[in-house]
Length: 396
Image 1 (cartoon, helix red, strand yellow):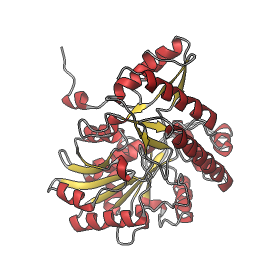
Image 2 (cartoon, rainbow, N blue to C red):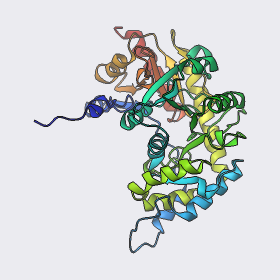
Image 3 (tube, rainbow, N blue to C red):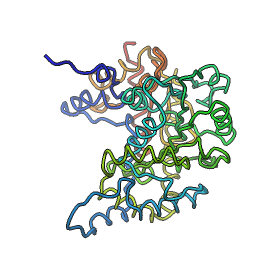
Image 4 (cartoon, one colour):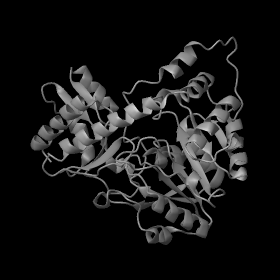
């Protein structure tokens, strides 16, 4: 019988999605499941984007340019300039989601068995992208005690070897919600220049910052033009996760020429989704103002309610819409499955994402979960109440 590849065997399961069968079974039993496990916003997609697809007059659904529509790239360049980022249309390649942008970035700057340093916990799919690219993830641990701030630069220095080619950050962070300061970004800029590395920044949550904090992009750092690669996406910004449109952005012409070869190999990003994404750039600022206000309220509600549960510690996020909570359990994987298989409160239960899958260091984060505050405040209060009652009776 033919055998599958070792790479296929090594591909990690998604810690976010692997519990889906248990959630589906719970629903079939008639239970309501509150989904705190996945970053799928309930915010409405801008009407201007949806209407652009409805109104599109297309007789032949053609390939687009491999870099994406020129009109979209021009408009996206202007959007970045309005945000204070010196990005030209030729610095942008449109991709099929931020996921493809990350794969293009890894494929363009790392070879088989090269190393990439990533502060953990990190977006779980970085493990999958690295495995698919034949790249080794070298984690540097940040802790809940420091609210998941950037680890000391000395910790990065100790991990750099001749095979190290890049540092990857998510800013604001998924799963932590941590927002790197200008000072922290500058420290990373200094170290990548010192060691001749790339700094890849996943900035898909750039709009979602709270308490007066401002997002500082790697594209803003003077002198980092040849080192910086930015990853972006429409998924969260416009609540368009299903569009699967992102982009890779860099001023480094060799990086972009290389990424373009990967873009050509997959032909082009999807046409209708580009139409929607281009139109979405006309979304008024009032939309974002309302969304930020809503998410801040949800964050405050979630953190307040979690802090009422004995033995729970939560890191307060400065951005994105996730937080990490440390629970009084030995194994959050077991607890998350138990919630779906064996527990309900008046026919309702919750689904969380065990945080161990957001680390690559074995045995770390076993008692932590990631919670996405993408539900309305009333549902968040109900969800945390269920969590509190469940912890009180969980046979740890």
